[in-house]
Image 1: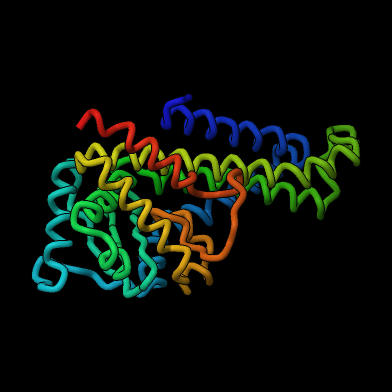
Image 2: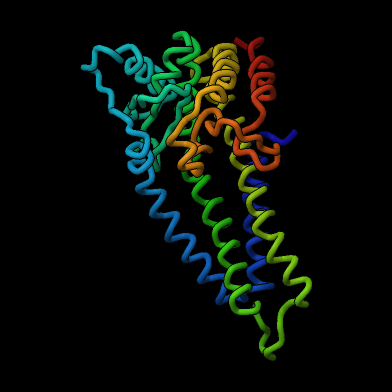
Length: 287
């Protein structure tokens, strides 16, 4: 099996290649550039400002070293950040019953980690430590940047397809259509689907890598495996109203927070919990 970083690189190359092929076939050079600029502008804005928007969306409350109620949680994040050789991120608590956690921020110097009240209730200290190490691994691996790039290219592909539908597809220098109309329709239908599949595969690869790196940061892969099992069990019994209203934030969480929805593996932003646990347990012999 490809290593997670190599798999991510291959998938990123695939989505860029798909963009090139679809763009050349439907939009031509001009259409490709317009679509990429539009998608890039939207995602650059998201890259710089989405952390504040998401934290506000979830009603996250910042925790400081002086907060008596969450002092142990804050100190836990501080110790893990030092172990990971990361700057201290901002630390937040979300008053949400569903157990979950996420990291956000455009780089390690501007990062934040958040955990719900629900996750603090069901996990013991070791398990919570494993979860927060996983979130700091996302920060260290700059996964926000990776997801932004993949979202930009996937968005550009969708934009090119929309332009093609509106304008009838790209034409060559002689004024003829670049594609047979039937082939063009198939490309317009299948290209966004293929881009989404690749984007979801990138997200799953980054989750596997964060599990691995998080276990290394905490030095306790078994604790993270136990935490994932507990969170998976409880997360789908308790509805997260904010996540249900904003499903685009689901990929940020350690476990998909959308309750009552069954995802085909290909379309899931997260790997199967059983597979994540199995990989973590395979690491325990080294600790």
